[in-house]
Length: 129
Image 1 (tube, rainbow, N blue to C red):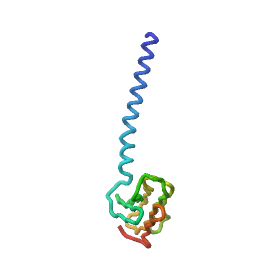
Image 2: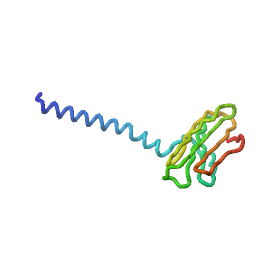
Image 3: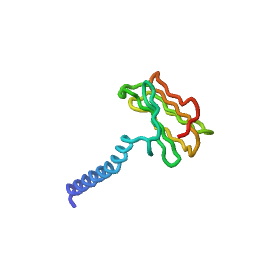
Image 4: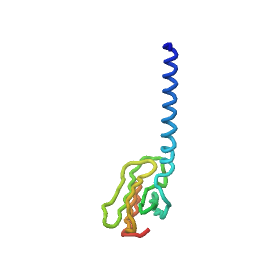
């Protein structure tokens, strides 16, 4: 083979490899952005500056905090604690959501907390979903 043919073959293989990687990576990434908790939504806890949404699937409970006005970077927090276990927490300065956080709760009661800016939600005790 001549050097021009080898170069075209190598470029063709590189383009095919990149296209294959994009086809594999893009659907999973798009799915993760569209839905961050798996399962069915079981409760929403609204508070003045946002909402804590709780999802459940096969004994696992997932929670995230959504702001009322997304887009501006602000402090957000979500915390989920199953009875008898340590809390799982995500906090920081986010634009669109805090979380998701997931715990294996089984049939345990839960303690849910969320915060956006100065507004807070706290279940103030153990709740059953």
